[in-house]
Length: 263
Ligand SMILES: Nc1ncnc2c1ncn2[C@@H]1O[C@H](COP(=O)(O)OP(=O)(O)O)[C@@H](O)[C@H]1O
Ligand SMILES: [Mg+2]
Image (cartoon, rainbow, N blue to C red; front, side, top):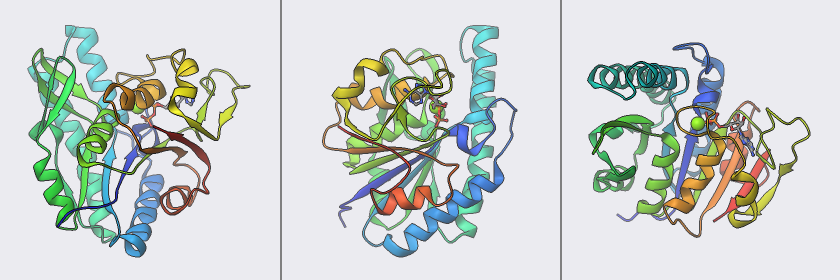
């Protein structure tokens, strides 16, 4: 069976964890977001293929950052620690999904992706099988094998890669800000929100957005990756995960608190 309409939901690490407190969870937010996903799935699950990707937040970034500052790279022990930490976070999310009746199957990217010269290569046949059997793919930002040793494949990059290979219609980036602004709203209080735009209209100020928010590049990389991978004809929604009902609204309509970017 061919999967027609695929939606990819990326749950940012900043939403599901408290980024600067190690291995901390925002349990209520996680439960509510999964509740909203399951409401969507119960109502529209027959019409869409659903991919849920989560970031690392305080389970991924601090581990990787420590390794890089100590050893200048992700060595074998760091790889094991990061993988273990990410699997722990994934286990927690997976449990909530299963308890809520979402038929998720979880795969760690280190088991189906590689990075070569910084570019992802993933075995996507398994992913299409998961979707065509009416299962929800649950995956996450991870450490993977690369031609330079071990590297991070971020949840954002993975979202774009899966979107391009499986032909998704929409990516929803659920994050800790309520949309895309003309500069970082956490740095500049008078930043203005962009309700809707084509990606080429926002590239200019995105190029000025800081990259060093964390090891995977923040908002700039999130939106640039679609260009890097040459994705076209896709709708991207950037929305806050802290507003009750917002994920459900964004999944079911264009009436949500956030930004829509056209590629
Ligand atoms: N132009 C911008 N518009 C919105 N957010 C931006 C912008 N530039 C930088 N940011 C920062 O990007 C952050 C979101 O990226 P990130 O922290 O990586 O979230 P996630 O955990 O969802 O991946 C926001 O918290 C914000 O501070
Ligand atoms: Mg991020």
